[in-house]
Image (cartoon, rainbow, N blue to C red; front, side, top):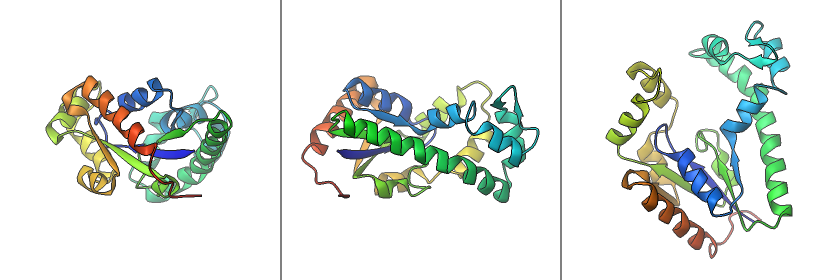
Length: 199
C-alpha cells in the first residue's frame, strides 16, 4: 500500500483536498479529527492530570488549555508527550485497517507533517497551496480570526515555500474546486506507478 502524506498551511484548502481524495475512494486519516476525538475521550484524564482545571464534563476545554500552553515551550512539550503517542496509535490502526481492506493508496492528512517528521513515514507528500493573498483572505474570513492570531499560527508552521520545495506534488487550490479535484486525480494516477520509499 502506498502512503501519501497530505499537508498544507492554514487556509490553503487542505481539508477540501482531503475530501477529494476520499471521494476517489481513498482512505484518509485526519490527524486533527483524531485529536478532537482524543480531547473528548481517551486524552481527557491525562490532560487534566498534567494541566489541572483544563477539562470540564469529560472534555478538554481548548481555550483553557490553550491559555496554559501557548507561548510556553515546556508546557507544549508536555502536552505533545501525552497526545502524540495516542495520535500515532490511531494512525497505525488506520493504516493496518486500510491495508486489510485492500486499499492501494492511503492518505495521512497531517497539518504539521514536515514539522513533526511525519513525512519520513510517507512514500510521497502532496502539499496543498495557494497564493499568500488568497490564504490571508480565507483565514481572516473565519469567525474570531485576527491578524495577531493568524501571525501566531503561521509562526508555528513551516513557510509555504519550504513545504512546496519538499513536496512530491503540489495541489494549487486557488483555481477553484474542479481544478483541485483534477489535480487530485492526476496525483492518484501518478502514485500508481511510483515506487514505495519504504518496504
